[in-house]
Length: 126
Image 1 (spheres, rainbow, N blue to C red):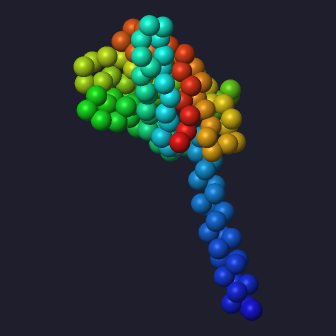
Image 2 (tube, rainbow, N blue to C red; image 1 turned 45 degrees about the vertical axis):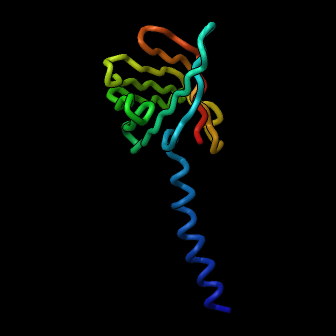
Image 3 (spheres, one colour; image 1 turned 135 degrees about the horizontal axis):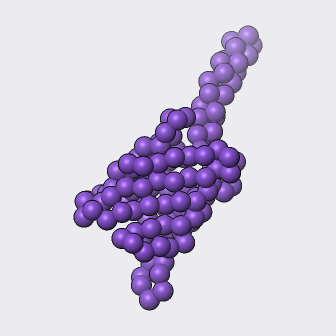
């Protein structure tokens, strides 16, 4: 019985830090669709890591990917900005805020800029 009780304590100690990792607000893969009138929807995928100080990652992983070069998170209002240039040199940029912060499938809601055009965009963490 003591062994079972000790095992439960150890598991609880391990589970705490694992669950605490969920607190990083931007870690993960985010997906959304940008839409423009008269154009087909285009999927936007962003993979980000937040180390507590800065955001790293990429936009649209694959042959047309862009590395995040400029990024910031302002905890006041949970405002987020990130940008990069794809291999064609086009600017890809997002400015918005985190919604549903306490949920696993939180959202980034804001304005997406691609090749000089702006779109409303909601990215949902997968």
